[in-house]
Image (cartoon, rainbow, N blue to C red; front, side):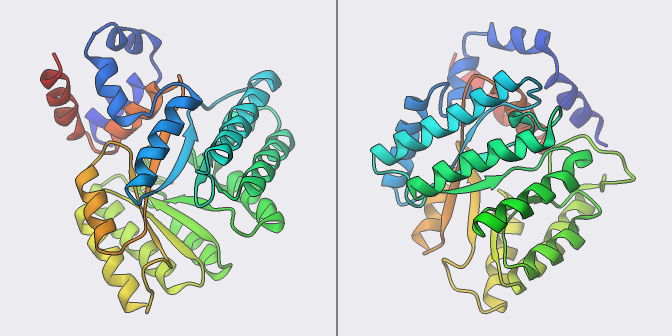
Length: 308
């Protein structure tokens, strides 16, 4: 693994490093570009702005690795409150919520986490929204996909997430595509051993393209999560080759990253969905975005400099 990427991922777990960054006055303004804010009202404001531009959204209440029932139940409450507020503001239909199972207590109680996810799913269905179960580190891949499968028995629209960096993902893509699932394909941002994950960027890119082709030829809905121009172009070309029309797949990009490209793709008739994170636990999220492509550190540094 790239040594800089390893350093960034280590920093994502350091409270001391986070405190140092937060103490720098310009940081909050930079974070605000990539995170909608800390509260539900902040998320609503961001969703209203993006949907007003014709973009779709998937909203993520940031947080993971929750071990106690109290914290896990608080995550459920955060999502149900968000969905109720989206519904009240007439913003829920067409929206999606992205949920991490460890935020629902997966590490301590798999059945409890599955039941909490079902409660969020029920709220999403009532509001006219959909739900995606996010993917985390490789040790949880099988368990996470098992939970997705059980939830899809209740609502086939529940989306899975797969990571191109993992060696197993091509097989997972084939199975999910055959099942007609909604599948978000990302490259992956967790530190993984060479035995389970590709380490070279070129190998990850090649895996991403192979998985894209499988999903585009399948009967489900590919959710193409990338900012890589080459992969976006490949997605559009593979969709056309598979006879897909705009609306039968989505391009998913992160809040604050290449917003002009998001609008350009939408203007071409593409379905573009923006990943909107909110909450107080933004540090790990931000560091993983930097780790996905360490060149982003230069972008982050320029953003800080421009806001002093």
